[in-house]
Image (tube, rainbow, N blue to C red; front, side, top):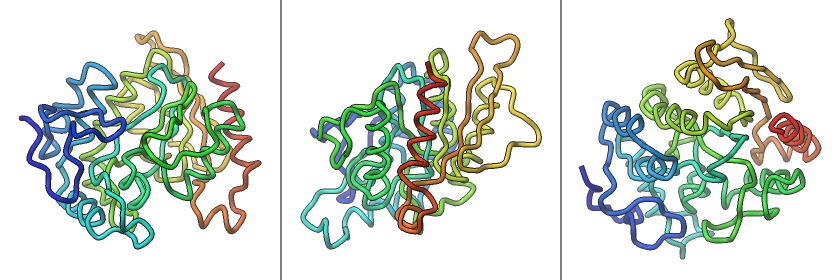
Length: 275
């Protein structure tokens, strides 16, 4: 099914937004079953990103992201908001995947790129830059020239949720996009860095679905936690390292729960493991 006519709260696919992976003919998922079908049949990361970016499977999330894009925050009142799901982005040969919870309402939902244009991203990109994993120390818009080096970024839920809290059914409906992304990255992926407890919890079922032998009980989240996950014996992939990292949210950075040094330690470790 081709992309729907897009309401005022969304940027139309193929209209020239920097980095927009979709076109007017990109198929649209309207429910969880269609998400599963379209995710599983995507033949490349580019095709997957295009399909993700026009998804309309979760009514509550669609209403919220488009409402935010119309009402806007006062400081961004003169800007056009993306207002669509925010797909994974970065190096298509990535050996490191950085996984977050969901796009920020006035960050990724505004810029069209996860972590770009919000306070968490300011801290995150600075650390990636110091660790040799990003071309620039900041990223504010989708067309700002930022490039990730051996890194891809994604969110467990691809739409900005109200109060930053997706519902379990929304998480589950969105999960096949992440499963497919892990599958398409499988040959070269060596490390997943989970930013926060939610991303950590969301990852394990997707690893199991992708053919990895997930430990039981599931490992506890913590900053600097490190778990080596083996592939199933019949699979040819090497082991995958999963690292825990406190989310670089404004609250966590202001209170000192996570510092620049703590982030750098995790990403330096990820770079070492990826080599």
